[in-house]
Amino acid sequence: MKSMKKKITYSRLYRTKDQYLASTLYAFGLKLDSSEWANNACFFVFEDRKKCEEIVRRYYSGELRIDPRSVWDGFKTIKSIIFGRS
Image (cartoon, rainbow, N blue to C red; front, side):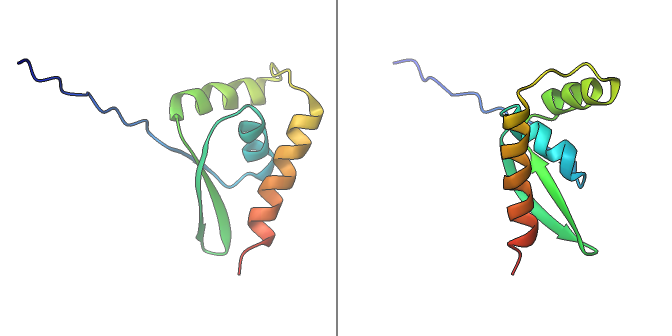
């Protein structure tokens, strides 16, 4: 019997402390892996660094098109993480 090994791939993570950028990444459906606090700043950690970097590039060049309600919902989620800190 032939052994089938499943290849496990790990995506590199993308970190940002920019609330608006994190809201946009979240609105585009990128998975928020975690949030980390360092020096009184909240960093948002997303999966799939390559996709994140492409969206960030398009964000800063003004090429993104997205439903504003999605961004607003993302912003509310990101803010709740910041202000929900205990």
